[in-house]
Length: 309
Image 1 (cartoon, rainbow, N blue to C red):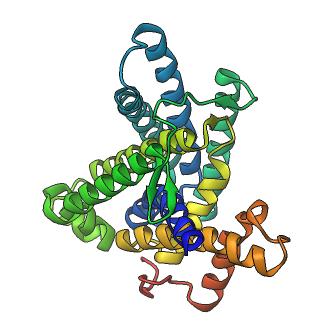
Image 2 (image 1 turned 120 degrees about the vertical axis):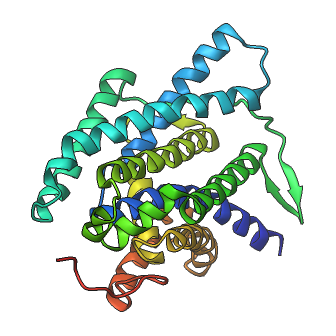
């Protein structure tokens, strides 16, 4: 029972990070009908920016509490990620809104490679240890262990997703985003500034990616220029699992994918005598993606809708 609870906790931690990044994918797709495959690298930019800020804080204010330094690192990484994501939209995607779908897809892959190359030039190609700012003594929950860093990650993810729901459901900008997602042309006729909505969508996705990036690096105590590639693909799988374009589907898909990976690595690893253990947990996300695309391409909470004219 203790092992099962431990795997559930690990799955929730992993799934929360996937959900934060998946929301960026699904929001952009909902508004632009575009898959931004560079979004995983925005997570990497957030982690590297947070790492740089932490190193500066440890030099100029080493006596600050660890949680305060980590929060400052996140707050500092957010504008960096927002600037990068908005620049990507302005330079790489805006002129391709009416282009064939293959053009923005190839552009997104090119932007991803560009971001990784720039990060390698700035921070180097070797993994960089991420400072352990939170206490290392784990907390005990029903016989399972969870670190203070993971507790902070879960709280931040829950708060961020809750605020996003309030923004989407209760604010004027949220209504404009939903209207643009439903029908951009009609929304424009009703006075909605589509460019502003799209920029805001990229900015919100960048905020969530910055939080996920810093906390991912803090959880695994390491950051490097290529760290966003696999989490980005998995978050995309989570968005497809929940229903690409559906905010609640992205949250559900992220949590489910984290649980599937954690439980799969544990129980399937035991059933196969360790052959498919934790070292092979990455395959579960892509097996799930293949199954979902085969059996239900619209995802758990997605709806089959016709292509926009």
